[in-house]
Figure 1 (cartoon, rainbow, N blue to C red):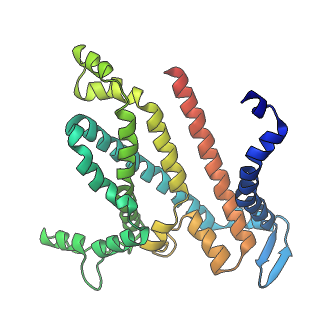
Figure 2: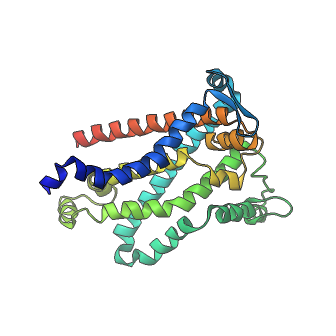
Figure 3: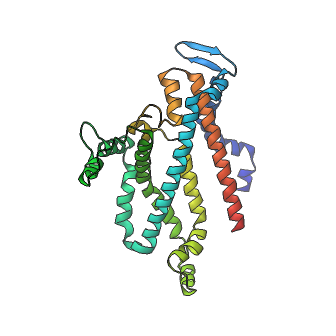
Length: 294
């Protein structure tokens, strides 16, 4: 094995094909997209070199600021919701349901495998107010509360998006965190119980510190997914009402493929890439500091 790893020809033969595919599939499109940021137009109308005009327009574009604010708000709210509810589910699986949790885990995980469009259509029907009341408004009417147009204002539309995405994904994080909790040695938990730790005290001082690595992994999974949210918002609200629920990805898609401005769309994509890199570096540095303390 040492001879193989020390031979350059062997390394090229083993790693070369995978590196070539990765370069063609991942790096070339990124560099290509970066090149578009100094042009305007598209493949049909032709491209015109505009220098840094797209970056100036990006800074002055109010809709970019709104989309960036919505993206960050969405990422924070959904990540907190997914991880907290997922963690509560995993605690339920391990400490309450124990070995009989498989049926509950399957039922809660089921929405994860449903198509996003199907889930969005279901929530549209549940929260609709016209042409007929959905299930939620029927329940509100039953207790004397008038129907609410959930998709008529930015706040209520965001609430429906948050409920849908947290409900849909918490089963995945429940299973992910469950895998981390079952690795905690039973002897450690039993020793803590003998020392008087139980309930919330056991979770706070024993379970959370020992499950911190998988907890941080869940946060990284969630934050990276939520920053790139696209399909659920497109299917549920299409960015509305108006553009109040448009994330950066949806604005980038509309700019590039609806309005044919590849250059400005690529500039928005570059902003989103930088945002993801900054968040990822921040999380990794924070996790490294926490693990060192532990």
